[in-house]
Length: 257
Image (cartoon, rainbow, N blue to C red; front, side):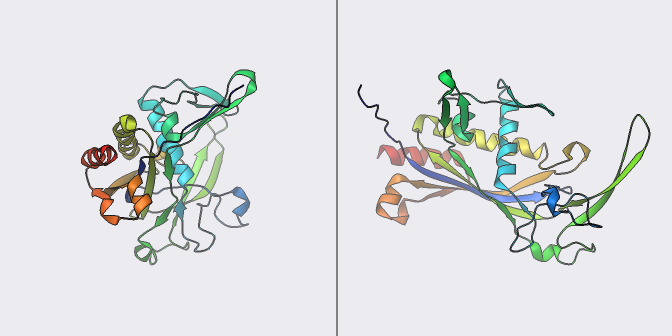
């Protein structure tokens, strides 16, 4: 039996950076184990070293993926019950969702088939902490909001305190795309831009249907690092621009040079 040989393809990397501005209070929850007696019922996730609130890359990537699945009307599979959670997952390497965000699916003979993600989403850290240092709350860099849920059957009240990152907070984001196929490069970058646009008309974090988590994306820039840059270290090969179409065109042209 002959050994199957796979050839790795690497054209380079494209880095997409920018700033995410919180427009309405945002809540991305921490583990319930962190709740202290007499404290906030639902705290936000914080960096353990700086105590600053941040947005985990997993939260942003998951939201971008779910919005993309909806926009592209992908078939969904139930992966969890109570509550039902449905996602798109397949084993097709040309699937615009799975090749971008990754996939792991059981196929014949219960074998697990993986499609590595082309997109890396970094954790997002607070970039304007000085502006939040003097907000009039008893919480560092955040606010708390009283809510009162009412049982629609018994009319019993259930008051709670939810910690939120306040409107005006800004977080730097960084997405790194691995370019593997020049014929799919432009479509993949367009899909990333589409997902960022969808996010601005949706919400990130919990309680989005009640007004939480509206954001705006600002100051987007693109940088292309072709394979020759890594091999030679020649910084003149780095491609920069605010238009992804021009950058991708130049990036593909560099591969053909």
